[in-house]
Length: 520
Image (spheres, rainbow, N blue to C red):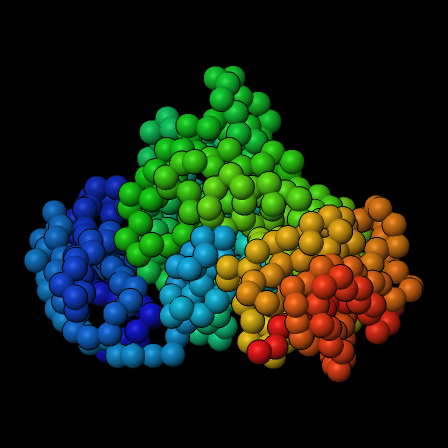
């Protein structure tokens, strides 16, 4: 038995053979869903004589499966299993009613609050559990994480021969993915298989079997998981030149990787790529690309999100901006609160970054891909690197409360029952100065963020010390006017408006959110 929107696993035993299980044995399993449709998936080697295949259980009812292989022990096996209804939210999808928003498979709107935990699944990180538990507590609904143990390189995925996979390493990654699924099923992991391994990425288009195995094996193992989304590489510069240098990779190499992954993808797992800062998103029109991932700086007006919303009807995600420790803002808590609200009301999505999670935890010693991880704890050393608990890092004075107000964003939408589905970003309605005012509205509901910055430099701005005001023209009312304090989560009620030319002044200084709703 399996849960709807959960995972079912088929276990198979191969006949004795000298064939390489990663490259020389073909194994597929075809699942027949209750509606009669079939889905074929790749099986994957899991050590010894064990092969496995997994299904994302997207429908309740009776499922059937049958294996096919050039290994006798894996061929012609079949079985059935029952999928029962559940309350699991399921996979991340593009929202069926709004191509710029996300939804879980069960239809619930997905409020995107991203966090950067690059080394979360890396075997040598000792504080991974505190990291993911506290990221969820902070309000994160998505975590960016890569497969690289070294700084950006994924060589630890392989044994010393550079071809076969280090199953110890892959199984440890899976342990952390499963822990997240079991304890925080609402939280999506953006898996980045190739990380920043430029050499391995370049080899993909040369037909290198080890390079191509990484994505194929990762998809076979985890595409069925409801908490997974794929991002092929991270922070690479895309070039069309035949001569490459530095972090450059060829456009067609990424295109080939995207095409291959999309063609194999059995369960509709969302797929994208990630480029260097200020470089935009080159694969915008490629059919395999499901969402737009961006890296920039000081996007507190939502300008880049607005630009890319016009280019393609897909979710636009600002996956990197500032961090608390790298390129820090002077007033981190205000900066990231402002970035999140501005991105949401621009019709897009943003991501926070705290510790230097792209670097290894400073107290680690690692003994190799086939042995156990040995951690020698060194008190007060290296804790700004790697992954560890968000609140723990704040208590130690390493972080500065940059993500403290994300929980209030959740509270706002939970209390009001609103979503941003089909909300229209419209900064012109409130003065066309998005550094000060962000507006989104639909059918008599207006949501406005009054950023109230002290100046015009996002990296040094602090929230203004005088109560901010906003002016707009409303259709004939009446309206209720409710004020939400985004850094305390408190509400101020009781105001009304009859519509027409309207100026509203916040109840106090700093930044505010105002909700205007037309009454019957």
